[in-house]
Image 1 (cartoon, rainbow, N blue to C red):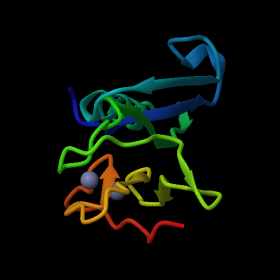
Image 2: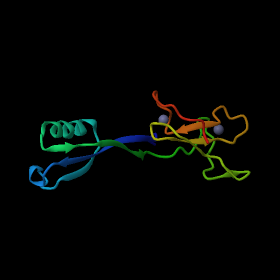
Image 3: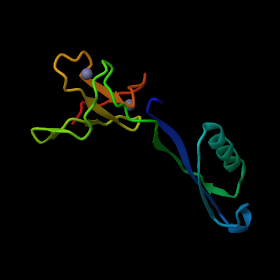
Image 4: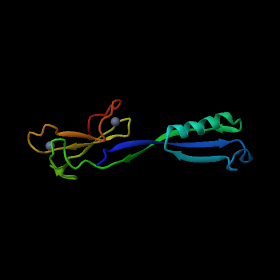
Length: 129
Ligand SMILES: [Zn+2]
Ligand SMILES: [Zn+2]
């Protein structure tokens, strides 16, 4: 089973002053690349092209992997279960894309809360709402 994680891809839009200056023969070309190396290649090409007027890019995130089925102590999660009308799983906003907070309701569980995807070294999850 693979741990869940956010994968960062980049969306980039390249604009030319005139369509005939673009290899795509349009003034606008938009694409998504999966690696920083591909993005860098596009950005460097855009910078070197004096007919390019703008090349904004932004990270887009894709959640990959499987949702945990057990807490670290081995208790089965009951997904979508509500206690007193409240969903057991909550959401912690984070600049990485966010984490589901999985709550184990076994009394005395040593790991009652688990962040999915796991909190990374540069994560700063907000308290679950
Ligand atoms: Zn547990
Ligand atoms: Zn995070």
